Every structure is written in C-alpha cells, then in structure tokens.
Image (cartoon, rainbow, N blue to C red; front, side, top):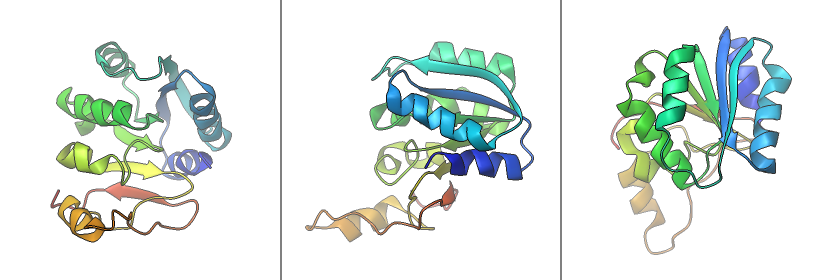
Amino acid sequence: MFAVSGKHAQDSGIKKVFLMAPNYQAGKDALAGFKAFFKGEIVDEVYVPLNQLDFSAELAKIAAAKPDAIYVFLPGGMGVNFVKQFRQAGLAASTTFLSAFTVDESTLPAQQDAALGFFGGANWAPDPILRCRALDRQRGASGQRQSRRPAGATRRHDEGGF
C-alpha cells in the first residue's frame, strides 16, 4: 500500500529522496514499500522513536542532505508536529513532501496551512478538496469521516481555506 508514493516520485522525475519513519514494523514496511518503486538515490533512511515529537535533529539532516523530496510515514501526533516543524524550518520551499498517513483527514485539522502543497498517498486518501470547516460541518453530530478516494490515490493538499 505504501508503494504509490514511490511510484509517484519515480514517475515525477524525483532523483534524491530522504526517508523517515518510526522504528517499528509499520514504519519499516512503509519505507520498504516506497523503495519498491523508487529507483533514484536514497540520501538517508532514518528511523525515529515511536511518539517522537521534536524533529530538530532530523530537520537539520534533511537540510544538509538537500534531497529533491522527503517521504515520511509519521502517523498521528508525530505527523502533526513534523509537518509544522518542516514548514517552520523553511524546507517546504525547496523539498517536495511525500507521505503516508502523515497528511490526511485525521491530521489536516491540526496541521492546517502547514500542510498546503504536501502530498499524502496510501491505500486511501482524502477527497480532492478538503477544508477543515467543511470537514467539521460534515462530521457534525454524527462524527463520521469524509468519504475516501480509491486505493492507490495520491493527493496534493494545496486547496486553500483551512
């Protein structure tokens, strides 16, 4: 399921990628899935402790490596913090952000504008236009999630209005 981002990177002509995920089986599977289709250079492959929230050391490594893109699998709070810190570090201007379960319907309400222009791809991805206000209205009292795109979807989160 994680291969869709690797295929997207390969098909987009990306040459150098920095990989990062938590150090547990799902993180290892995510990076292996990406590498199954991406044939360019992996400038670094970093596994962080589960539930790490400060990524300053990793952001310094990314800046020094100067990759064309990063691919991260950082679900939940890890992803919320990383997206914000990545944007604050100024890396979003020069580095394509690819992810799985990092920028998605569960994290966008907290990431807001920090996730604009970032890609999320996995076995599902949010609907094409996802706005937090719309999501809040849609969930309403039912608490149900927004519908999902088909398997293998990759979506860039650059529709304004968060």
